[in-house]
Image 1 (cartoon, one colour):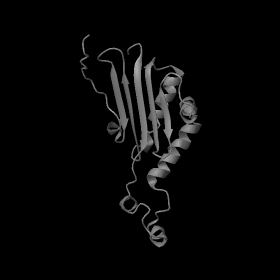
Image 2 (cartoon, helix red, strand yellow):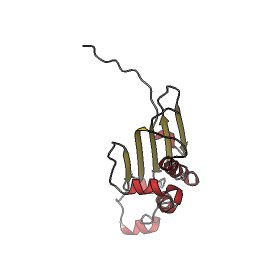
Image 3 (cartoon, helix red, strand yellow):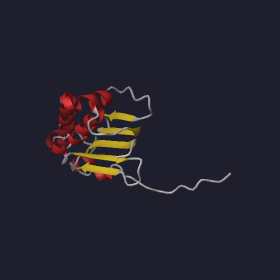
Image 4 (cartoon, one colour):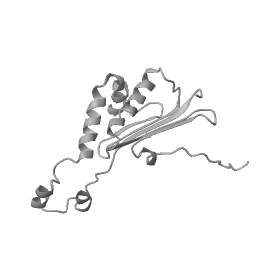
Length: 160
């Protein structure tokens, strides 16, 4: 691994797969809501709530969860965001020493891997780019590959 890395972890509940909810989103009368159970949480919503409750109390994810859920942000320009409305956790560290055995790294990786039992309901991706050109990692659960990607490009700067 390179000395410093850029790391992104995104964890997001999948969209509600109940077609009736998608098409009738708030445009139905109360009787129809009751008949089709539209006021009840979906499986995706229930699994997301279970996932959050689990990572909030697991010792191995405690540090990551505390930092993400505090809402205080980060003084180094990193992103640690829990968006409750979108049911999404976004983590991005730039220029971080990312080595197994570091308490914070292990906690964030435990958070990422906590998605595995929920991957039918929650998508997640982990991306790491090290300093060396070949030093890259990517892992995902569910449809996590659709949440972010590593892109290499050449930028031509104007000369003086």
